Image: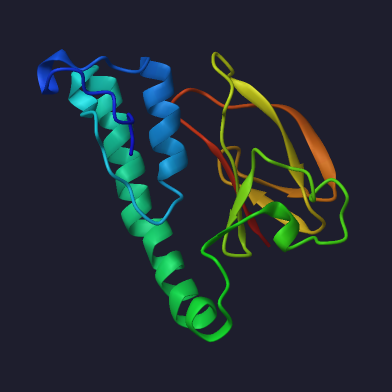
Length: 162
């Protein structure tokens, strides 16, 4: 749940997670099968509300159709999970075997969320192949680390295979 279960004595006395944590939490959740808010975005400010609307819409209009396709084509017939570790598409890649802060939506989308407080950049490992960087609008070659990739607070990094 976005915001966690942090209720003390009801809605208005809730101890809120930091604004940054809330935003990063909802961005990551946008790539998962469901989004549920336990803390309302308007308990922060209008910018957080706008960010929440954007990522909730992204979940509904981009991620949900992908997940429904995966359910029809891969889960029912092959038992594959919706979200997958990076090694799923690169089982012989020693780096992909140990990546724990990136994940896949199906086999075609790699998500590299910010998981470090205060960070506005991160290193990303892309398995072999060509990957489209949706934040920066460019195709990058995989099989390598991308170092210190900038990520504003209202964005998250995700790539799709080309």
